[in-house]
Image (tube, rainbow, N blue to C red):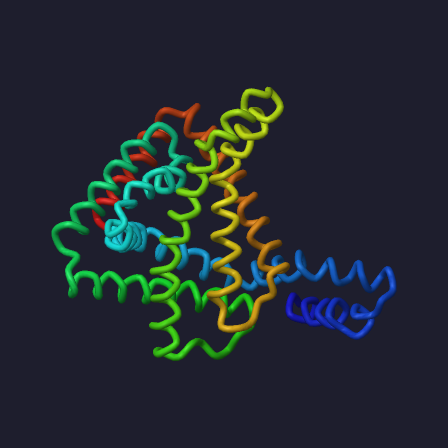
Length: 273
């Protein structure tokens, strides 16, 4: 019965009439997005891919930080990763500081003790394998049947992993320079400008998350994704990330038992990684 209903809705929402320029056609095109999400959720495939992405994300945290350390240490900018790692763990409340410290210690030890030519290559291969899982999930969403070949996968993923941390640190460095400049310091003496700067600083972590999601949606699927759809998806994902994180933080903050449970589980998972 559900299959017949989905087939009827597919014909109605994706048929010729929905592509017309009439007001009803425009409405049907908007309704395609929530319908497609609910349809795929009902079929169960999105849940499987989401669970796989959670597992892949947990396994990739330490290798990604260690790999970024190895690159950024050349420029003496490896410590700039710490606030980004903290944002990742911030929904866990007070435990975020301890978890961030542990991850930074693990990554620092890996970078200084293991990452040579062989260790660097192993980290790169681990991350490429992890991104392959992300690409498979994104290709499912975009209905892409052919994944990247191994040659393209290695070159494009390696470029993304090397250039990404450099661009991020360059952005953070330029932001610090701009905020510390004499012109900005002079302008911040005005209450309105100071409030706008403080507002921009508070929003910067969410802007970084939105930019990260947008880049993933544009470059990871093995198809051409336009900027506007990727930006809409990145903005939606960034808002959901912030909202879910806020709800989870408030829930953990007012439930001491949950704080202990989730923090201990996360510490165990981080140690295993």
